[in-house]
Image 1 (cartoon, rainbow, N blue to C red):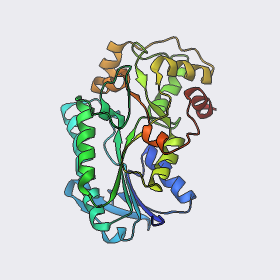
Image 2: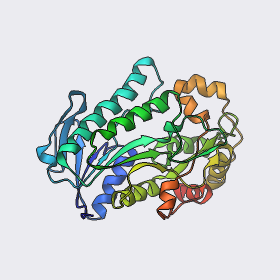
Image 3: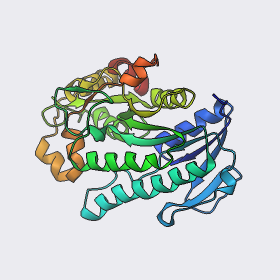
Image 4: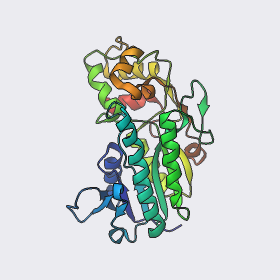
Length: 295
């Protein structure tokens, strides 16, 4: 397998993308950030996924491509127009970058997806072999992964990422201030399963996959999912605060709209591919993960 040296990344300014770029640079890789605006530095490459445009010449010789760009599912209420943006931002961007990869011929194309692929799983554990669900995000993930196949001659990995934990952003970043003020508690019934992973292990797993021979769908979650009630209890202990203010399901639906299904829904996801390939999580348990993250 050829040694990977030069890596391109879309979505490099997001929570995962910025952490990935920093770690890759720290590890000695040459990193090119693919950006929508005019380039400002020598390590940037411009693209316009809406117009299917990308600067192929500047990407010549890349060994790996990480595609992480897409409208955030938790950023806004899911109006009809924002649902279209969630889907189209993924389809247009992935089509553009996958088509470019087929021409550029990197060693590996690693494209984002999410555990939303599985839909509602209840108390049932699911692995990568499970068929997808049928709700809105399941359809989005299925179509998203489908267009990643537009680089058929390239080893392609689809990252089915779970709830990424980091105090600087995402769900945990929003929850910590509430808990610090003693306003935290379970969400809805608290019985729904949350499949989580620390940002630290997310980045480690992505680089592990890049340098492996693995291809296809890969769940990026801890091997130990927890219920929301267990999660909020562990966060309260880590912050030394009570967790006595549950958020009722009807209130979450009113505030979050369609995204409330992701908070109240249950996804019990097992990272079988990573486990079978002997990837070792630094933070496999939520209590030690949250304690480390909030210190």
